[in-house]
Structure formats: C-alpha cells, structure tokens
Length: 71
Image 1 (tube, one colour):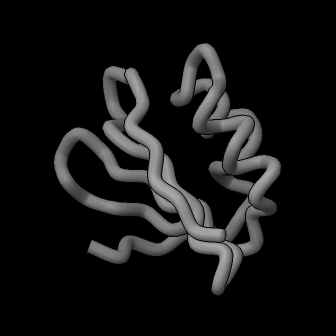
Image 2 (cartoon, helix red, strand yellow):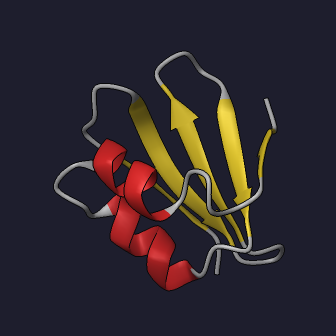
Image 3 (cartoon, helix red, strand yellow):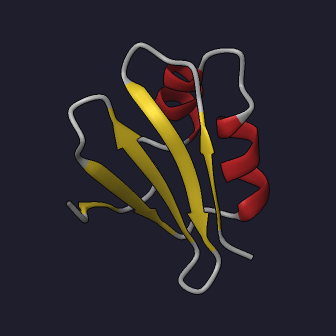
C-alpha cells in the first residue's frame, strides 16, 4: 500500500512510501522530492514517525540506500 504522511521537521514536509516500487519518498521544504530505493515499508514508517525525521533519515537511510530526485 502506498501512503504519504505530513511530518513536523525543519527540512522535511512529508514522508511517503510507494509500495509498487519499494521507495521511500521524502518531500523537502524546498519542494524537491527524494526517492530512496529498496527501503522497506517498516523502515519508512519508522522514519515518518521518528521524534526527529532528519536524524532518522541521516542514521537509517542516507548513504545506505540508492537516492534520486523525482522532482
């Protein structure tokens, strides 16, 4: 199942998950959207619900999963 969730963060406005392709989607304050390939839905939910979304992204996603900008 795909979903999007607004988050409170100084750099991120929304975290989502595309279950069709297994990508974590991160919408930044700038409006750009990053897609991280190969992320499990469980990890995407952990990031979306973390007390600090930015810290969770840095510790559990960035530099671990393949990244591309989708917009």
